[in-house]
Image (cartoon, rainbow, N blue to C red):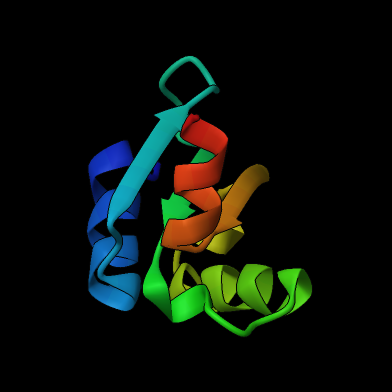
Length: 83
């Protein structure tokens, strides 16, 4: 079983996010997560490259995770969405 805390720690280490939201949507079994990651590391990267980098950061956990939905944003994109 993968926990929100484990996913959050891995993503924090990999991306040093400005904002990070990890939600376990699987009723606690750790099989389905919704992610919002805001990081300067996404600057200049296409959406697919951002998603691949998230999957790589969670490579050890992915065999136990059934589904991941994610928003990968730059700080400027995040700020624009908040207005």
